[in-house]
Image 1 (cartoon, rainbow, N blue to C red):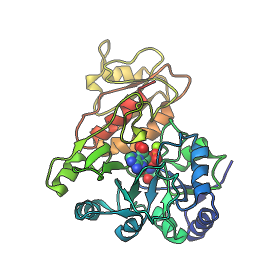
Image 2: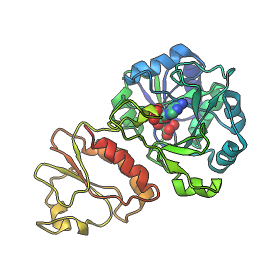
Image 3: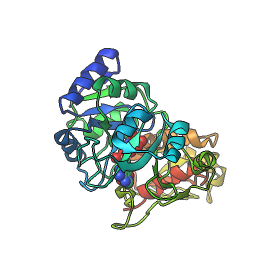
Length: 332
Ligand code: TXA
Ligand code: MG
């Protein structure tokens, strides 16, 4: 099992040396933890796929520190730059046309002519990118098809034997993977919802930004990560519950009043065994719920539970992204 090391300057330099040497590092970002490798090094990128057990057709996000570095690997239109200036650094990934001379390993974009680029805001991620001096390919740091990780301990649990080092810097603030915006067509389209919402994007672009979420069982999807079953715990997930069944764990949102056909919501919750209830946000704050989602699904993902029953989360703002992940988690 690899060591979890707190992100001091020395640790960051050590992690950068591992990246330059072709190794893998668990990297904190503001969205979720990433499984980081040198995006220019085909062998290192291949190790990411092997470690995750990820189908090779699913391309990776390349992390750089600013728009200039993004333009060294991809073409950006004036419109792309407007979006980038508004939301970078931050939880937004742009799908751009890859430059012929990008130097990126072909494996990174799985042979596509496009490449996913993100400029993270997390200070440790930025320091690691700077110290490595290379663009960093990093999918979420979890085994393929399982929950993304938002704490160093979860990274260790999922990929502890696969990474040389986990650079630890607390829990990811946003808690959901970045919004993925496809900028290769005539109109920018959201392929994966996240904390940068359609409303925010539409405002900056001055036009309505729509979704192409795929939601298909297989095959015809723009972003291979859109396969329906994706962010799944091992325990079945039951959505839009109004009551908890015997043996189920419960994930709540907001007040418990809407819960409980047989008994009141509060009583239903009190009656549950310890460790089998978690509250995404008692105040009904969607950002707090997003930040808690994956760690609470991890916490309730236990063979002792027959299923995880989840109360409804409103479908607006970042709630769209939460519901997208919940629907995928519920799919088997
Ligand atoms: O927040 C995040 O984006 C995190 C952190 C570590 O940065 N990373 C992450 O990476 O979630 P990953 O690999 O788990 O998800 C990348 C998503 C996948 O759904 C993938 O299919 C899509 O981006 N993607 C990557 N390159 C693409 C491309 N060229 N065209 C379309 N979709 C692409
Ligand atoms: Mg992922």
